Image (cartoon, rainbow, N blue to C red):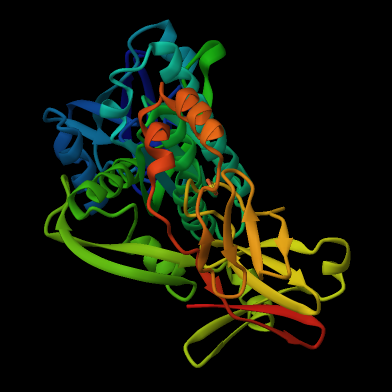
Length: 443
Ligand code: FES
């Protein structure tokens, strides 16, 4: 039987021809690392063959690829992929006592398919250059608070913050449909951003935007780091690829892009706006990226069929029971990315956009005047026809009030011009009642 002499232990062990050197080390209690569990997915079990390299088995395809990628010098073999037919002397990569402590045959991490989401702020430098660092921290924290909530509500985990960027991972604890949830989170982050923009405009006179990229691929998930800062995270080429998907938003002037791998996972659930072929660093040839507009979770699709129908090009959505408007005559529903305000006037229902076109502030709670058929935006006394959305009176404030408002708003460029905005109609939508429920139609 062939013999292997392991250095630096200088221990001689019998090595049957059909047994790998990793297994020989294990059987003889020789400390060794095999971070992937001995499956030929890493190079941590490598050995330097000092004598008898010709007695080693042929390199497997996996081994060839890994050794080439790791740029090791000649003479290295992977213990988990190599067996011997004659004697050899091999040195393990154990250099000092710290190495011995870390030695383990156990898997260090686990290879998993996960969804990875990268987000970045577009235009943050011009937005923040005139602000104090305290303002920047305040805005970033406000932004992250909203975005992290979205990630967590969709069963994801924030893995890292990189400046104003963020990395989140989905599926590390075997949650259901991680790719679907990651795409849903990306779209909701886009919507959160839209929701935050009027606030930024009002407070700072300018805003910024978001870019999100999602990829679905393998990564090694495990504890990384040492001491107090050790944390459960994911490592792998897929993480880098996800960041490149996100960066491609700049090139395509898009906001939410997903890789083709994600698309294959969610294609029955998404509405795609566009797709593009592009070169991505580190990948040969072009890759396809998809700009996604909408997603319905698999678990929601069945339910959706009972609350949605398309008639004559109008996308009707079931809202609430007619009786619910008795106690709450003004209700807001999220339909196709719009917040729609449904108001009950007499026995009829009318639907208009929830945001006043003047400064994007909410119309909910506005006084209804049945005689004139109008709803009032109380912020700056503007009235609209609640049936057609036509503007009836625009910023009807007295001269002294106008003067006071102008003075108060002077410190803010955007708000300063707010009283001079041209009149705009508000969007209106058709409604109907079917089986005791109010339905609203949108394009
Ligand atoms: S926000 Fe409605 S009138 Fe100003």
